[in-house]
Amino acid sequence: MEDMKVSMYQLYKDMLTSYLEDKSEHALYHAQQFSKQMMEQDMSPEETVSMHLSVFQDIADDLPEEVTDSFDLLLEVMIGYGLAYREHQSLRDRQQELESELNVAAHMQRTLLPNKKIEIDALDFGVVSVPAGKMSGDYYHYDIDDRGNFAVAVADVIGKGVPAAMSMSMIKYAMDTLTDKQMQPSVVLESLNRVVERNIDDDMFITMMYGVYHPDDHYFYFSSAGHEPGFFYTAKDDTFVSLEAKGLVLGVSPKVRYEEQKLKLDPGDFVVFLSDGVTESRVNGEFIEREQIVDMIRERLHMDSQEIVNEIYEQLEKAQEFQLRDDFTLMILRRKV
Image 1 (tube, rainbow, N blue to C red):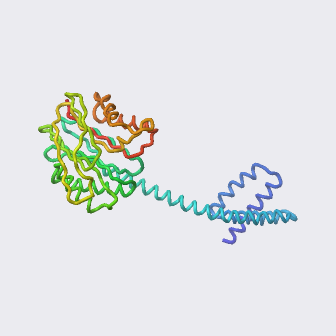
Image 2 (image 1 turned 90 degrees about the vertical axis):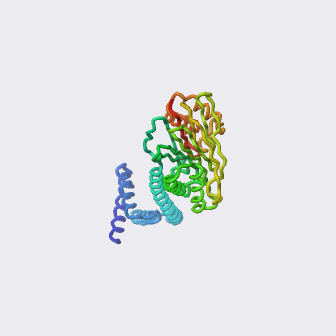
Image 3 (image 1 turned 180 degrees about the vertical axis):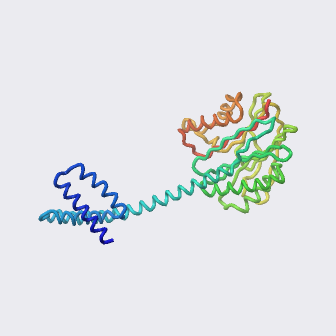
C-alpha cells in the first residue's frame, strides 16, 4: 500500500512538473487519466490536495507563506467536501438499489393483472390500466366461470406506494379464491370485505366495483364497495346513466351488506367501470366533468371497446402533459350488435 502511494506521488510529481514547464494539452490529458487512478485507489479530495501541496513544495523554491497557508484552508474545505461527497455517494447508491427493487416489484405487480383473451361471442371487452408511478394502487380483474359467465372488477386502494401494491396482491389472491366458489357480486364483496378488514391497516381502505355478465340471458349483475360510479349506455335510447350501488368501502367493518343491482344488456348496450384517476384527470387545469367523459366515449361509439379505452387514455394523458396525477383504469364491457 505504501509503495502504491509512492508511485502515485511520483506520477503526480512528473505530471505537474511537465505541465509547469510547457503547459501542454498533453499534460492535461494525463491529468484526466490520473484522476481515474485516484478513483480506483479511493483517494479522498483532502488526500489529493495534500499530495499536490507536497509535490509543489518539492519542485518549487521558497513558496510564499501565504500560498502554504492557503493550502491549509483549502485542505479543511476539502475535508468537509469529501465527507459530504461520500455521504452523497452512499445515498445515491442506496437510491439506485431501491430503484432496482421497485422495478422488480413493479414487474411482479404487473404479473398479477389478467391478460388472457376473452372469447365470448356476444361480448366486446376492453381495458386500460396505467399507474401514475412505478407502483399502482389500482387493480382490475376479469374472468370466466365454468358456466360461461364473465366477471369484471375495478378496485382502488386508498393509499400509495408499496403498501398499496401489497394490498393489491392480497386482493388478487383473495379474488381468485373467492370467485372459484361464488361469483354473485354482493356475496363476493361481503367475503372480500372480511378478508380485507382482517389484513390491512386501519388507515387503509379499498373501494371496488364488481359485476358479472350472464351471456345466456344478457343480464349484468353488479355491486359497489364505495367505488367511483361507472356508466351504463343504452343503445336504443342513446343515453348514459350513472352506474351506482350502495355499499361501504372494504376494510372498515367486518359485517357489511352490499346492495346488488341488475341490468339487461340489449345489443349495443355497455357498462363502463373506471377508477377515480379517470374522473380526476385535469383538462386545462381543471378536473374533468363526468359529462366530458361521456362525450369522449360517445364520439367513439363506432370503435370497439379496446380502441375506445385506449384513445380516451391517450387523450387525457396528453391533456395532462403526459404526467398522470393518479392511477388510471378504464374498462368497457359491451354486448355486441
